[in-house]
Length: 331
Image (cartoon, rainbow, N blue to C red):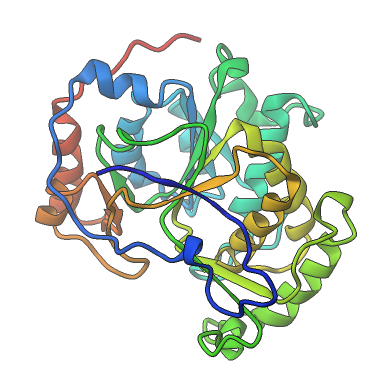
């Protein structure tokens, strides 16, 4: 399939409808196309993989991805076996600077990513250096082209990303609507249930705080955007804008489904020409609350979610990678 980049321009006040440029595409499954190990290895060789909320048992699967990417960092893992990550030479940040997560609500990993990226670029080095820094690959940091953020139970195949434009932000889908649009249900923005704080008032307060930052001063207070946030790609050209936005947003108790789209809205105001959305024509199976069968896994290049406690599901993901020869790793 072809990934098409679209400019993320908010609709004008005269058009209170969902932006046609931000209409979500239908996410459907597709048969995996064969790809040589050499070609697959070149896709993400300069891309960092940031894995969110991993249990230790998940490294049996996510560890296979390490041969495809420049390296992996685990953010806010759910595992209580944190020392085991280090014993296996894996970089992990517990992201304890932020509020504890609440069930499936992520308050930590996405703002934590901003701190990691600022450290890697040298814009805001963490002092003293974090413990993960010695485990993360040292060579090639200046050559990084982007970061792929992945929920730990989101599966990918080696050929995933074959149609990417790595100069553009990539996400699964995103929709935006302004106040007054009949399609916009503001009550839904409270994200009731799960015992968490109502999100809309927190989101609105956080937006006003963002507007105090010159780069984000023109952020549209009446625009509400939402998307599937379990997987996205940030090219290096937008790392500074991402880090600036989430540094502020992370101070609020915003769950990932609310905070991440708001960060993207803010990033769009920085004037970076690379900020156009590949609003996913790359098909990933499922949705946020679906569970893939082994057959689903074998027939798709990506999808959510895979039950990593299920032996047959783990086996299916490993079979996806069985024909992929790991690259030699420097550093």
